[in-house]
Length: 284
Image (cartoon, rainbow, N blue to C red):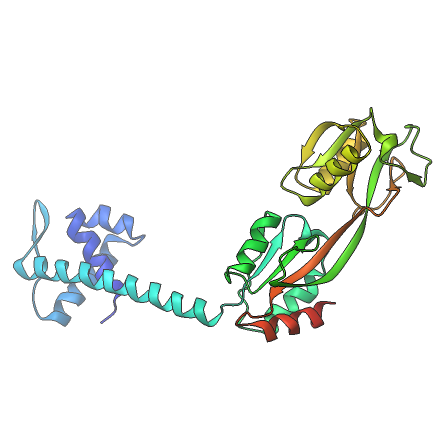
């Protein structure tokens, strides 16, 4: 017996009319009628009385409808339980701090995921602190975090380091410079990554260390938006050096040890520590 026929029966039972039921099921009325007749033949009992009022259920039809609902719920429970089993089998999840996907080797990560079925192949960015928290809690087997984590329960290895730069538009006095100090930025309009990115907080700290609060006129979620705003002379953009220079916009290095560091983090006492170490070796 085809369980899909149960759904057809349910819809006809609820609609009591062949035409609207068939429409809901994306079938022809003739096709639905034949399917119900075949089901009745298989059960060796009529499920409906055909009348001017439509398809009225027999006692057998009412009983069959109740059992169909029970079967449907049981089937849904079965699918949920199977999904839970699959998720347990593919338990190693990887988290990405906001912005980290821009600088890591996506092809290598995808290749490793494909070769290791224990890894859940999902790509979700979260706040940096949230990624660290989920790795600590064991929800994630591995995370890409911005900056060295301070918790000694986490093992961290540097994956990628990018210079912090100031994107400058053509015609600005800084355009021909190779290096500029943070102090010199004072008084300029600044476009920064949004506050959910670690780089925003690092830039504010650098400015405060130099005795001023920056004039931030824009907070955006990705580097290309910074580049576009700089290109249109809205202000100067603070970002990791992830975009190439053009004739209109170029990156000027910020003096000092200002960098944007992406670390791979995992728990050394985690259930999947060997897979995490294997992952680190593969992507570095």
